[in-house]
Image 1 (cartoon, rainbow, N blue to C red):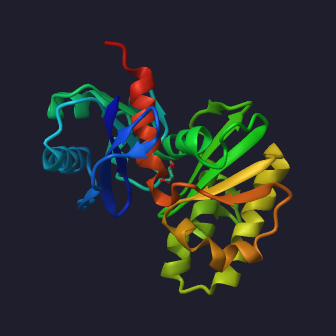
Image 2: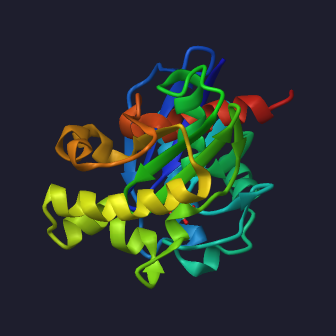
Length: 247
Ligand code: BGC
């Protein structure tokens, strides 16, 4: 079954068609810029534009950067606060006219990595982090997702950890790879104390450059780059939709 996976991110809204049985991307990747301000109306319109570029009329899975419960956004850490309380899933579905399912973006990336990436077959406590504009997190216990973990919002040095250690902070503050890695180490030590994961998979755009900072990272857990790098969210959102969809 082919599903259009979409990942709504801080800079771009990206998509591709995914074969959910194999986890393979079977189309080209297309993207549109994330509009500013990133309000419900502008984002839904941009997402519809992306769906239109694919000429897609089938099932859609969409990763969204907020706590999502039954399709509704419950938080807005890095997006416009007008999203809080919005039924993202119903809005998207009625605008694009296709069956659509919405999941937290990091949870989507986690599903892909656990099903087809480095987490495949792992049955302990496993954590997938996405490092980008914010820090996304997906925790798995015996292969089962515990949704909406939001570790990027944990306080670190008096502010949300993602304001101190996200990949965007490295660029914004022009930090060297080792200095940024030291910030990540503080965050990871905190997280390890809380959850003692056996495996930590690091995704997000910066995972394409993992050789530059992995040598400076100290974790008890095994550390792996995301097998899909920053495409994990697209693949996982598609798989999530396929699992939720009952014709
Ligand atoms: C949001 C999370 C999201 C993460 C990565 C955070 O700011 O609170 O829901 O998963 O960014 O996009």
